Length: 180
Image (tube, one colour):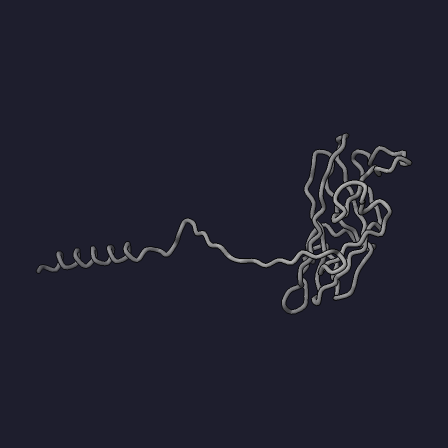
């Protein structure tokens, strides 16, 4: 066998071996996993949200398992029709947020913008809790009085939005890395 033929044959064998081994990549995968989740009342939840305002949790409208705020109030003795355009409003003392778990957590809120509402954020007495970087740390048993900060756009009408309150354990070393 001549040398050139041997080199070509070796090259073909090496290339064929590479194609047969492949890269190990795949385009999709599907798997089923079991997840057990316990849903509890606020009295026994890890993060308790207890209304402290007369305009919060309502048994007259909405779901009594949710904390809902109507601005303007659905009470008949209210004069106003809502918040103004291009404005910022802060309503304090609406609810108490308490860490009833066994671990320290950081708490913040997120909301989606609508046609008339720029954002709705949870507030503590000292700050607006509108991102993970702007959060409050709660040890087990600690809580804080919370309110809402509402920023509006230049639209009028009736709009609904939701605020998602999030809680997460700090990093493994007990710290929480917030940008400086």
